[in-house]
Image 1: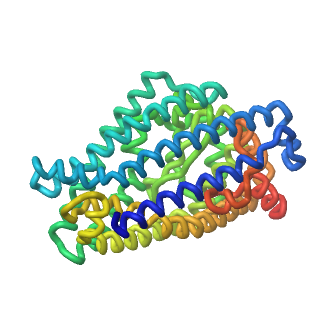
Image 2: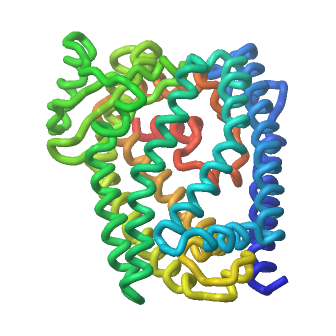
Image 3: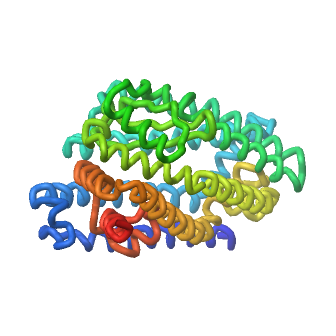
Length: 410
């Protein structure tokens, strides 16, 4: 067993232990008695249902994570990644086709393994608690569409990056960085126009009280807005949301139809004011810039591993390759990713507070609090999570933290 393999296995084991420790801490916060700080948000019946929902998801997460952990450790310990590489090399000489075949087989196997868990989560847990609205036909069509998108878009992107690393030498990562950045910018501008329609119907928000209220607020905020759409999210779930996407003439606000059903007009305007606050405070641009820098660092570090024979042998292979280097790097980068994730979460939570404050500056603080309460209770959100779990994983402050900050802003 090589030193690299020992390090890789150690990282996988420690990462699993750490994530399960945080999940355990979160489970310890569960209680049949409603905490005093949640009185007036959850009633006893809704709180009991939320605790049951959290327990079901926590147990399910533990079992699915444990299964994935055992599979990954087995594959690494037996050198099955290297075995697959050696097997494919008997039939494929072209490095690009080799990489596509290697990851294609892994992707299909992973989908086969994860499908039963996804099916159970949708049609057992979400169904039991009244969230799931998807039919089995919709579920399987979603899987097929996701597979096609991964094969077409993912395959083209992977083939191009593989070619760059195999032909352009030590500066290939710079070209790969440019390709990934261009793709990310394209998806930011056109995701809602190109990808979303494959899964959901988006229709312009009809004239009426809600559209007038949104346009009136946009005018007050100096926010040019013509594209307001409603998405038929209720075909899959009762959970509500809204999102903002794009830049300039391509910016678009999308409301889930469930959001319109669950909140009143002022509460919806307050939620959208929060989203517009992100745009006004330049959070979207900041996040994109950070993402671009982060991607560049990852691609540079990846380039340092691709020609390493020891890493290929640690995975059971005999020849250094792009795909074996990428597999090893995805594991070895985990500790760094964890640290970067902490700062990313802190930055994201700060931005959420600022976006809330922006909405409150227009006198919408109470409406935002009311809307957030409704959405949290409707989705059976955990409003009393473990602080350490929040510190590592939450991109948003908890509802209680947001309420406290909004009340101070008032």
